[in-house]
Image 1 (cartoon, rainbow, N blue to C red):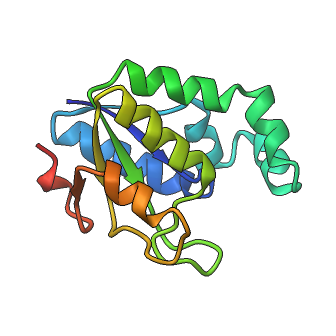
Image 2: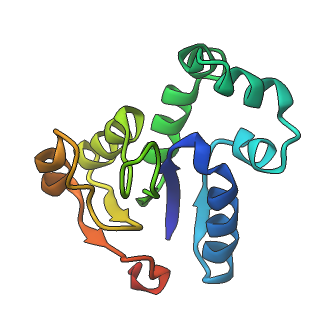
Length: 142
């Protein structure tokens, strides 16, 4: 299955780890190519920009929103990596919520790595779109 990995850029190292696990399982994972450089520290300009507080500028310059939309359209499913961030358990931010919406309206299967975050105001929207919660078990991807 061609699976687009989505989630916060802060989880880039986990994106790469899960990308490799999905490959070993026979899937064809995809994500923005700069995630590898963010994860290994070689995309210094991008990392510095993300950490500067001007994250929206990175999204514009590197075309993150449109690039992920294209990946989602060209895939079969998305896997949302929702780990704890900013004091929120199983964090799903605004950008990732949009990616879930892109997948939903384009009839792509939506997998959530961890349970749905209950502390966000848009919990009902997430519940209405997510197909499978994996509870950290990638073997549940079918």
